[in-house]
Length: 527
Image 1: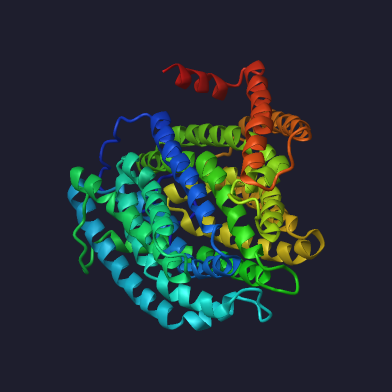
Image 2: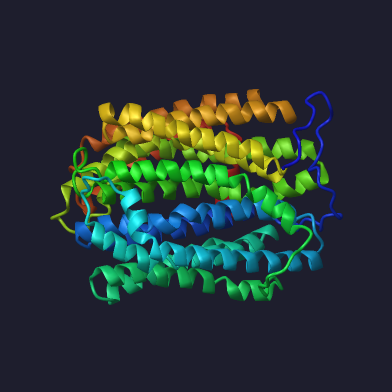
């Protein structure tokens, strides 16, 4: 079990597990780290849009089946790869000396490879049953194609898990450059494969795998250069149990999230409610939302997580609280205008996927409706993302994952309640409501342990939210004079002109209010 919650009447204590003195913190700038991660995320998301544009050139029958197929390895990806690994491995890894870190990495990577190989084999043989579980009885996709592509993409789980090990090792020592740009290699390799190889189901699936290989390979030279490249082995390590105990509660979160994904996929493939192409439209909207969320929310959280872990290991709770406020302010300052602009310009945003004037209207309408709703969720999920990292850094995993799991189950309930009446917009509104409730619950739990900075966060949000609303109104007004969205060219024009006008209003307002985030941005631009 994770360490027990500290007594609210006692001074805050660090992680309960005894550990050797932590290694000295590398003297790297948090702002520099954040900018590196954001630059890598931006490159990844922009190249991801190009990859999605290329995928949208395929027939809707293939793209709908493909988007169901890649959900199968993604069902286990969060548990075995990015989420569970980074949030469980780094806090334990940071408490060890250099020799023990290497031994832990060897044991952990060996165990992870073995588990992945077993799951990959099971996934290939059970593909018909899994696709049947993921799709509605009255499906609007070709199940046979989805099963075939699922069997082809299953090795992606092993590739992404190994890539996540590399990313975790580099990030733990605050080497963000190589790991942040590895997803760009994934996208470039996938794009090249999709453009050069035949236009069919086999090579659409293999294009995904080729990208996974590239994402892993580009990180290996950095691991070797920094002396972090592990030699996987099956064997125990005293700290491996701590990592696995921290990972264990993630099964609850992963199970709840996959229950959500299962419900959403079955809902989108239900021909009685949605037309063919809705699954691809959902994927297009998801790519845009994850770009915004990854760039302005996840990147700051990823960059500061090793520092959160270091402060927790040292018991430096004053700096821990200060870093919490700073990160929430930075993340929400960036997320607020993007949220407002995506809300009003969603049709223009999804238009960038349509490289042909004869685009599928079902894809377009589904993507625009879903993205507009999700745009509202950016600010609450920014707070949720940061606060979750503060719990993981203190090895308080159980509390964080319980809140996450309840939030995902609540989101499914909201889907059932809101989607029938609101249609596609109901997806995003459900995510927003769930995010608000999760943020409030995590803040209350943080308050009991360390004292949550309600006033500082509240005053900040009281400034950025009205500014973002004003920016959204300006962007909407400007868009009334622009060509109708749908095709790539008017979509790009709408984002550049209307989005640029709204962003300019937001930045001017932040300058007039003398917000410190604006001063920091100006300092960065002068360098």
